[in-house]
Image (tube, rainbow over all chains, first blue to last red; front, side):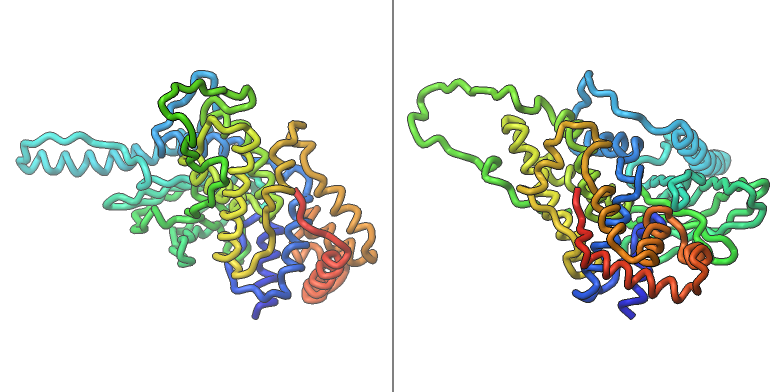
Length: 217
Length: 195
């Protein structure tokens, strides 16, 4: 059992994914250590992603109310991600607007400010291949109702990819299947998950092969 | 989030003599002026250190984040850069130990705040930091041909086990066994984690 799970751990390392947890035997340690050392020796993979560095900077500033110095120019969110969040937020706004319109038509006289989702209720991540090539992005909104929005681009594919969300407690939530046309597809779906517990998302081909993965910031 | 131990440089030191006398505080030129410069100066190297210890990007990012989120709160900017880096490393040591305890139940790799200090203080370009590729190449060169080949295909060329088996013209199950034996031999040959 341990050998199989250790093999799975090593497979994840090789593929650049986060390995699953398991109860390792002490004799596994030297093999795991050698695998990590070899993986870390792969050229070009040891540098942090610019987006990660910028996002962490923003989170640290937000969390503690630290001010951003005038001489600091961290890299900002990629345009594609900003655009995606804009699209996703628009969907939320449309939903909220419909709700308010219905309430108004039904005689409600109060006015409401429609707020775009923000903070911990909106989580985003980028799908990447095991080689680090971007495949698309995913946004999960944890409000009521909650929803998931993703765009996926898998060149040369016209089939489908299945998306699963991975939670921090190890549970898996099916997010839906994306139909690809000329390699691209979009999925929007109502979903009920605790966004604070989101860890990552996986894309699978119909054969079960892993197409890509994403880790929520 | 882990609660990192605080090195002595970050503990409160009450004045032991004449407290009525106003004191001039000597500011060392080798200090950080704000938390942003602490972050900017250390995030790349700290990430690289974590990456070398866990071998995958998602975990390295999470652990790097945890180190900064844990360490920046109690950080005293009046401390020297060396003390700040030591503090970051002590925090990183705790965060990494907690990671292995949580995920595998055994310590696979660790950070030594003293011997790993060079990883944060080395001012050369980040691309030049660490000799992991050279060390790995040296160990791989000492292995029998088939062992060396399977580890190269898997870890350096990112081949799947199926692709590796196909390239080496062996079965998938044979490739798994070969990989396991090769890793054991590599470990015995001295392949260890280094920043």
